Length: 100
Image (cartoon, rainbow, N blue to C red; front, side, top):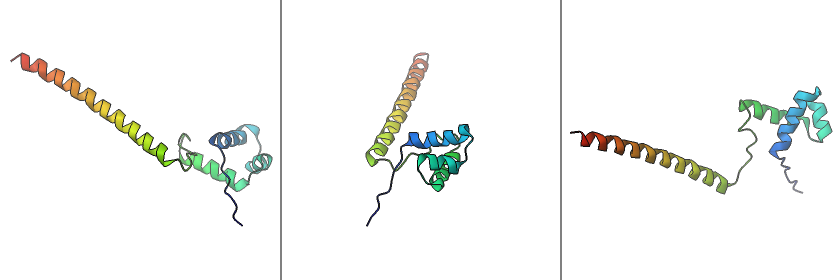
């Protein structure tokens, strides 16, 4: 019999870690209160600390379509920046060309 792997929302993970910090309870006690395994809570804490400020922690598996969309958005931003640089360069060269 297969067991389905449970997934937890990012908000729950962050709230659980915050509860450890603010409640004064141990990670084991918080895990027991939330009904999760203490090892899972410790893994969440480790993942959050590895990311420094924790903004990229708990990103999950993601959806390929979302990853593609994020890549395309970055590409559009890069192209817009390059376009602005070229516009400024054209303006500079056209002013210099008129002075000769």
